Image 1 (tube, rainbow over the protein chains, first blue to last red):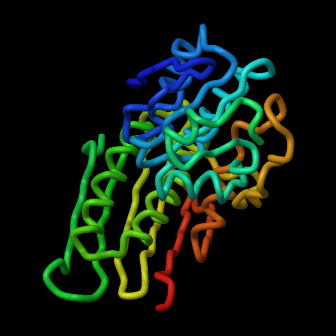
Image 2 (image 1 turned 30 degrees about the vertical axis):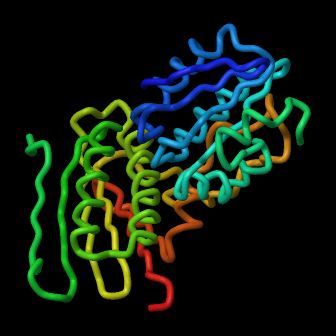
Length: 114
Length: 158
């Protein structure tokens, strides 16, 4: 599972460079995320722009990533595409995560945005 | 020992139902491979993208459920998948020779409580909810020696 990271100010951007977060890769994602977030500042943005498919195992892995950061740090999501965005909406996880339409908006948002 | 995957297609050159039968091993990597094959097939048949997207997610959830529950710790178990492309949508049949569903019935698939943040947010339990949300019809039968699940997805407006 290839993730790329970049830190700007108090925000770490973690970009998922894979087309799928599914049952076959959920554990790999959690492990890779843990490594990338280990020394992250207070806010982490997960860029899902390259992800084409997310199943319930992948969704569970993203929730696990959020829990790994809580309670002192938070996880926002950015740029989920059609099918992926639909899974967040159908499961009402769009009410749990702050989801930004694109990475630029996510990086501009402050940590205390809703 | 069955071959790793078997596929047969008929009726490709004329309209009407097209049936594809596939056999897969109970592992997440094989599920991923079969989904990629099926989606490519459906695209080639002109199935609308929105319907393919729904079918891919429904099948992923149903197949992963078999891998993680019915066929858990049964590496020699088999899963057989029939996909029928119809004028009005897709009919999907899954047969596996694994353990029965609890209570011989399909889980209700209620949405887990997502009202609380962080520590109490559930990491699982969304699979059956997604299947029930996206499939138009769901039938389960416990047969001698296995489970049969039929899922129908209808194209909107047909």
